[in-house]
Amino acid sequence: MRDTLIPMSQTATDAVQGLIRLNIDSSQGFTTSAELIDNVMLADSFRDYAEKRSENAEELKASVAYNGESPNQSGSTAGTLHRWWLNIRGRVTGGNEHSVLAEAERGEDSIKKAYESAIKETAGSPIAELLAKQYSGVKSTHDRIRDMRDAYQAASK
Image (cartoon, rainbow, N blue to C red):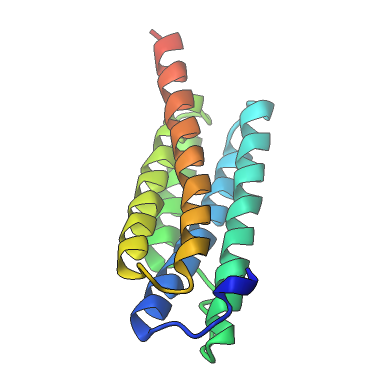
């Protein structure tokens, strides 16, 4: 983290601010998913993912604050709407593992794409190393959720 605490361009700062919002959205989305699902193993995994996304947001906030700006402290309206939809869908489907995983994977697609874009925008920036490290975790979580979704779908056939 220490290497990232050097001045960033406004473009890099804006990209990081967007990722803060997405990590907050993701953390809250995983928490909502954990509450919807009866499968204890999946719920525990979602809680772990939520904690990691919260940690990502805090690391990014420190970088923005170091650069003299106020970091975002909340998620986006779109994230709130996605959690609302997930909550409604989870209640209608009774917390069906495949449905919840499908929605979680959809959210993971969004954050993965945002990291890929931010990494391109901040290439050569002091924050690039931190973003690459966090992206690795985001991609890994995305892939696990996708694989679990596919496994639950295959099992239900």
